[in-house]
Length: 179
Figure 1: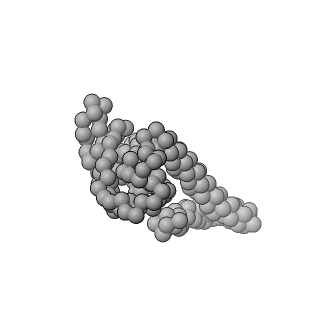
Figure 2 (figure 1 turned 45 degrees about the vertical axis):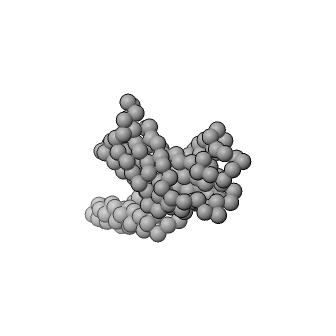
Figure 3 (figure 1 turned 90 degrees about the vertical axis):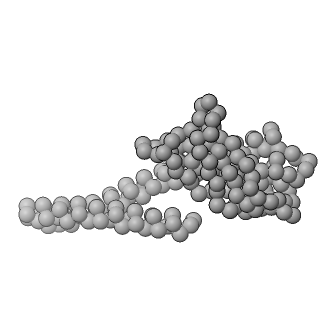
């Protein structure tokens, strides 16, 4: 796991703990006024534990959904390679891209997955992705950061967010294949 993810999990848990602590203090004060201090302590511990468990459960579900999307994208990469790839030669035809669009409320997230099905050649460079509308007209272009794909490697690139949602795209490799 990368440091950004772990940092996000840490701060998310701090927020859940803080929310649980606010609930814990208010429930403890309530039960203390009623003369039931022990019940207040149990409620306080329960509030903190419930907040942490609920928030971590939500994060786990999101991780499972993201892993499912990643597995589907990798399967699609393999299917495209079987249909369009050049199994007999090392070439750009053995490089594949899948872009999965997830529409949000205010923007869309474009998840980019790439694979190198060459057996001996490594790809190093950028990928230019052109997103198109229903009439097949260019809406915008996105150029990825430099990526290195070793032979047989598949990976997810950094998500890209835009304020429009379109599901059609094309790509162009802006780099070199090297042995």
